[in-house]
Image (tube, rainbow, N blue to C red; front, top):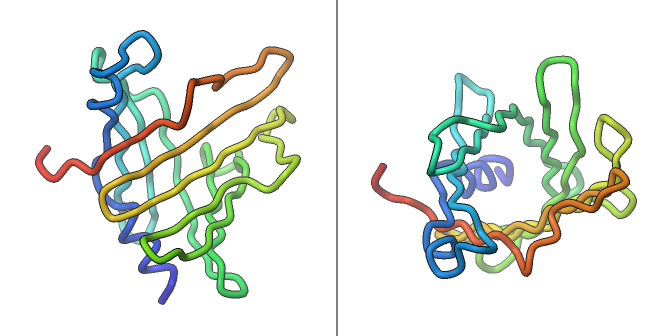
Length: 146
């Protein structure tokens, strides 16, 4: 099933250590972990320097008309912006739909490419102050040893 294949691509521990070490003035060293709790797909992110998680989410993966819908939840009552993905030769590519807004009504934009060993993402938003204005995508590489 496409949902299982998509989930397998996500699962694991990713970080952008190489990117952060090559250009520390533009990139913080971030860890991104995707894991299962029972049948629920979860993710968390944390900075290398503190080790403290700054974002945790739960997700639902659904196949709809040959595409993947990734639903994201801040907690049981707060739904975040959906992302849609299509299968590619090397993995999956997707992001938010044009004009997407988060639970606070803030315009958001995400574009993601996932392969076996690399997870790239551009995340931007505008709540009066533009955030996520990085010089390019975050480039996370799969960690095979924790």
